[in-house]
Image 1 (spheres, helix red, strand yellow):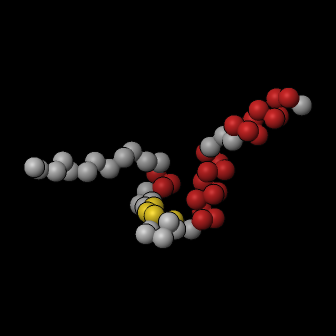
Image 2: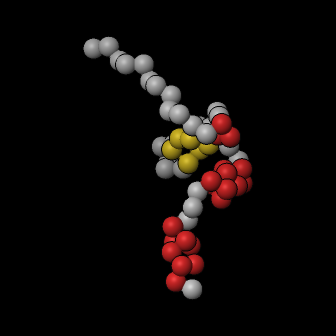
Length: 57
């Protein structure tokens, strides 16, 4: 059986080179600093829970 070559997913240019894995102990290992990843998510992802709560006010 031949294996298909793994296709790289399309990613945002700010996350170029991002790699994340889970080791045998269940710990997340990444090549990006957590603060940098959190800053990216804060800028680019809408938190649905916060969005819904602001509409109720």
